[in-house]
Length: 351
Image (cartoon, rainbow, N blue to C red; front, side):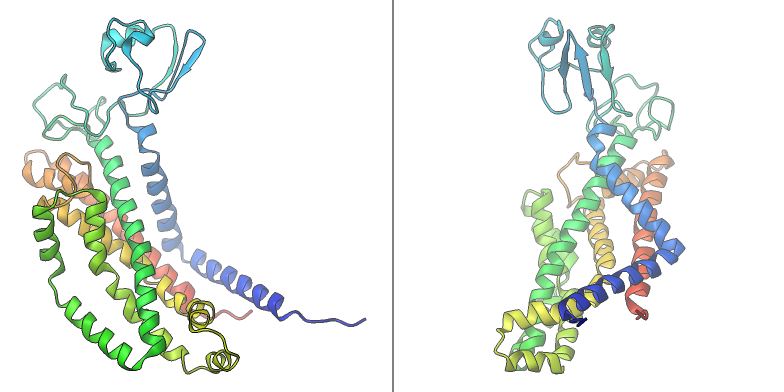
């Protein structure tokens, strides 16, 4: 019997085995593993924020019909009320309309911008049974704003990191692969670009442009990709002299194929270890802008706005403590995740 070796199969098997070994190394890092679970828990929790904190019910079953107020607006008259306007589901009169019906409310019956006009004291109020984390200086539920603010920060950090990696890999790959004048001029431009005071420029731009999530993302993206360029450039400069790259050129492969099929997979190893720290920088930048008042639109829930609430209301320490603890846990978990990823990709396990 003749056995024919398939080189593509061997390469695929080796790559899968290597990734499994890397995962085992990462999983053996207990702190990194627990931090990854914590980060995924926070991310999933924030993604389903409307189901956890909302002034609208999730589901209503009335008169043999299902209603989903969380997805669709209904008039009060559709439930037997007197008005054709949107109902206030927290109003005792409206709640009486569903006395004998099946209804599912969110865990927190307040949206991030809902004001509780029936507080027992002057806002901000400390934690109690009604508001488990208290209220801010406008009578809004802190737990609801924390969940929505966490979603904004995590999505901002993850989306910004993805686009930063894409831009940084492309520019760094071009510089490193072609070298020469391309690399020389690219480095000079990067030196000038990195010399610009990023935070001050973002504050100036945000001061005369109506801020929004995507506008702030675009402004920060102008500067967040530069750190990736150096890593990818170094990997491409090293790889361009390797025999497999010279062989690919001799076989007539295009530059794009050599760059993105042959060299890029090796360069991504160093890039992946850097991604958690890009997320940290992105979340910190957004929190800083919100804390200074140049970030998300006024009234938006964010971690930076919660920290600002703590600064402006020293008499209510729960606001500052909640904001500080949340930021510390999220950023610390990302640091340990990054250390675990570096350890996993830094080692070369035997297959």
